[in-house]
Length: 28
Image 1 (cartoon, helix red, strand yellow):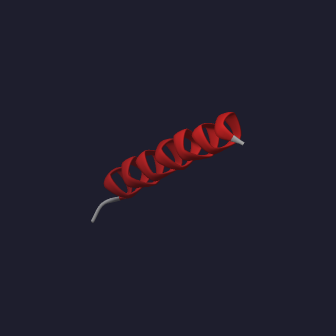
Image 2 (cartoon, one colour):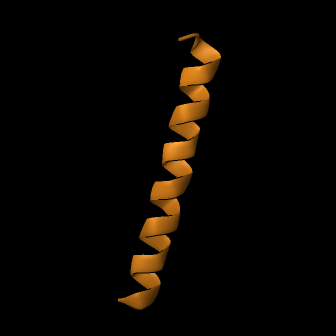
């Protein structure tokens, strides 16, 4: 894997986590 692919994957994971956290905080 090249660095760009890794960065893209990390960004994707981060955005998913952020969405998840936002959903949880809005529910709680």
